[in-house]
Length: 294
Image (cartoon, rainbow, N blue to C red; front, side, top):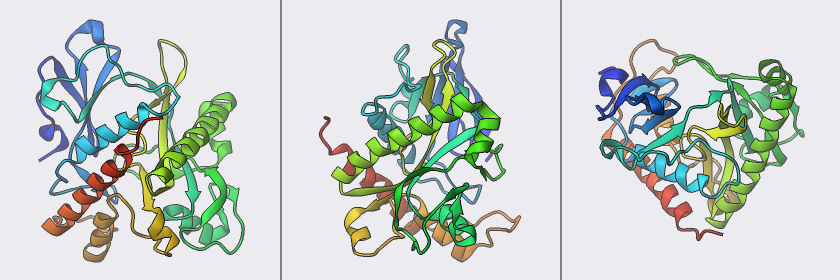
């Protein structure tokens, strides 16, 4: 089934685009042309492939957690209360303001892991940021670093870039503000995560300009298991650096059971992998949303 065929029919809205995880809709009402309905599906992707079967409850978990963070971050975001979320997708969708999105994923790392670890092993740097020698996988960095990526079209790999390339893409003032906002949000989120017994190792943000205000605005999903790497703080203190609250279980299984460089379709995920992944998403949401609001 194609992504377009998988999109839900929603009264008053028409489907315009499907990404690996999200489906986008525009209103049938011309007066609401400035809004977009963002529906988080239960689809799961890894190695730039949409996999089967889906992860039950994933879309609702991503939406709940994004809204939870929006409510705690003092920064403009794309959520709109102008019209309600349609009942067909209630709980896993957001009515949002359309933004003029920047072509940059604003990645922030507080710990060294993932693709950043590979870059560090290669040249001692991540996205042009020189790091101390002798770091081990999962180590805390001296301070969080801004390590952006160029947002590639669907089906292509994002490209890690340095700050100078961000300046070329969006201009100096915008680049500085994207870096400032990203680091500021990461610091706030890290403090909240620590109160829940978690470590925010790294995350990515996406921003755009709100055409109505001209203000740089936070969009897309925020600080979810799909966009972030959360670890148990106690496990990290015990030296366990690779178990995270996300789809790493899926990645690990695929890497062991499929040639990730192959052009063949990936195999279906076993039921146990699906169940374990769903449990990880649910556990992260439970840990964070149990925190009282400041």
